[in-house]
Amino acid sequence: MAYPAYQKGTVTFEAAVKAGGLEGKGVIITGGAKGMGEEGVRAFVAAGAHVTFGDTDEQNGSKLEAELAPNANFIRCDVTSWEDQLAMFKLAISKSPRKSIDIVVANAGISGPDDVFSVEGQNTDEPLKPQLKIVNIDLLGVMYALKLARHYFMKHPLDANHDRCFIVNASLVGFLDVPGIPQYMASKWGCRGLMRCIRRTTAVDGVRMNLTGPWYVGTTILSPTVQEYCKSKGIVFAEAEDAASAWLKIASTPSVNGRSFGIVPRGTTPQGFLDLGKDDYADGEYLDELQDILLRTSHRLAVKAESQ
Image 1 (cartoon, rainbow, N blue to C red):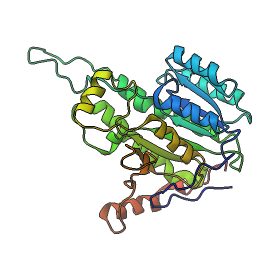
Image 2 (tube, one colour; image 1 turned 90 degrees about the vertical axis):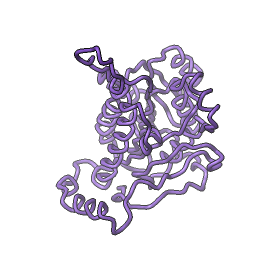
Image 3 (cartoon, rainbow, N blue to C red; image 1 turned 120 degrees about the vertical axis):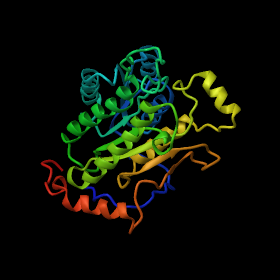
């Protein structure tokens, strides 16, 4: 079984997740101890998959593992550590029913004050070196997960029992302008770049990649004070469980590749997520013409991967 080359066109999910479609699959979720990650762990386990999840929150992670055992395994994982992520992938293979990894959800992320934007003041001779924790977690950590996923995906065949599905949980900030948060914004736009790169080699290596971009969601990435402020301004929040539902839909639908799905308030759409329709240029646009040139001249699309 092989996946076709990426094709333009939005995706509409209408049918429910196919019963048994995820049963026995090996899943990895980063940042899985709480929030959207926890909802994802629960949803994949309920669908019959085996989930290995990492997080730095050992208390909540161990508690969730005990509740869902033996179908979920927790490991402490700092996604900025290559060694931590490698250990997580090795654990996932050892624990999964088919000794394989089929689905990876790169979910771990943070926000907060940004040293790149802050200015020390006119009386400071030299600026302080900025801390890049946000970009290290939100983008570097995703790159580590993607590198590891591609390696371990290739160790199993692409057939009815296996998949090579990578999902990055980014943010709608990757589509919008938000002042004052350059690291967070650059990271989320960077995740879009990763997805749009990987989707173009799906026909070569069978790795499909999609992105979810949540709107405001009431998780610990936002402090209670920030959440209350947002709500006082009339902002309607999306639901964490709808992100998990989107991941299941993507994972259980092999034809879905190279798309960005917004996790949005249910007043926008009852299921709480939709294809944003912002992943392609219209036919005849100048950038679409340049895109076509790049694809026709890319040597990386002309070389067949060793493993299908």
